[in-house]
Length: 113
Image (cartoon, rainbow, N blue to C red; front, top):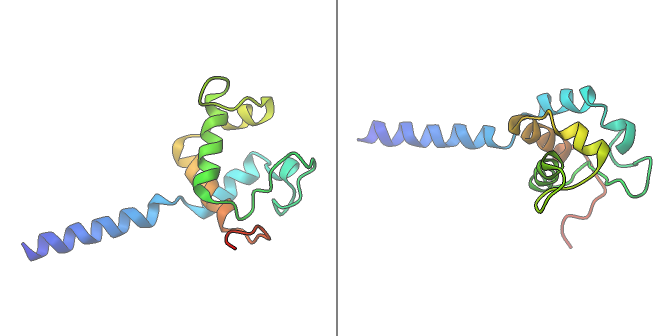
């Protein structure tokens, strides 16, 4: 019984370690999809003030936004021709990886007051 409990604990710890996404793969995806062309080289200075700063954003927010762009028009989607086109080919793992990478970047965003 003790060995089973240890195995379950180790399995849970290993799952939680990967649940947040792979930062290195997220970085590669950000380069592949050229996110910096609109959101800035360091993801803090977008080419248009209406484009969000991505560096340091909460990973859950970034995942939610990318999934909404992937859904496109509709009650639970976001409609933007550029972002919808970028998000459509992304898998759920790709989205988690991108979110983990962007969240890991240094930022001047205020996360808590």
